[in-house]
Length: 335
Image (cartoon, rainbow, N blue to C red; front, side):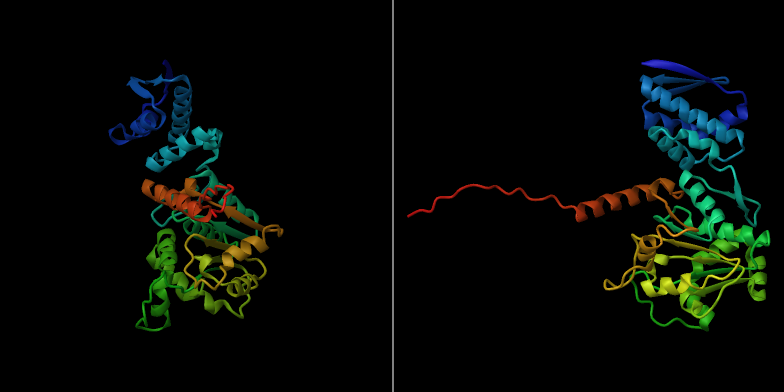
């Protein structure tokens, strides 16, 4: 049992690190089996030598984030503890440094994890980026943020958002209304992200001008998309033929971002997912980046990460069942 002391220069940073009702400190204590006591501008950490060292690095990372004016929430604390345990806490200084986009409410949109940061850099550096990962990793939201930023900076003239109209294991039947009313339910997540970035009125204005287009994947056939930022969402539900059709729509001055989760495929069993096929086929093609996000990049409720991990373990058990023991021996036939 040892104890170490951390001196904090700014009381504001200390308050941010502690969080409401000291919840952030309690999370560190529970995760690393240490005790943390606050005395004025000092934090005293007690516990086993290895755990105390990890707690100090976690606190140092949180103080770095607080000094930049970033909000410290449950997800940030959990993620930083994970980085420290993996020995990657030096990445903290790079996280949430660059603002991707400013939302309609003035909120800066930033990458919150190392995986998300690599994803955003890939989008900036490549013509086509494929983001593969579980729910809650910000694949679609960050892609829309990057599209809005490029549109505002006049790097592109249009934003085109599309996704396949595949129902998630249900049959909703015929939907009422015109074409737009029929496809809107499938495209709702894309609308939500755009409303957040631009505001409902601004979005509607750009949509009426044709600067923003939200359409089902079937309507991409036969088109050449120049000077556009194109996002294909829920790409795991495309067929191999649809994915090839979509990729060949690329025109001059355009970027494509493809997002999807290969664990949530809603296609019939006899259909190959276009996303899984594209990842294999395009792995080594120049100017195409493939980013694989993991449960560590989940920025939703803490339980979402646990759910994803539980399903991953279950799938591995199904794929690799325990081999039954075979006992070999010689048997003598009775006469």
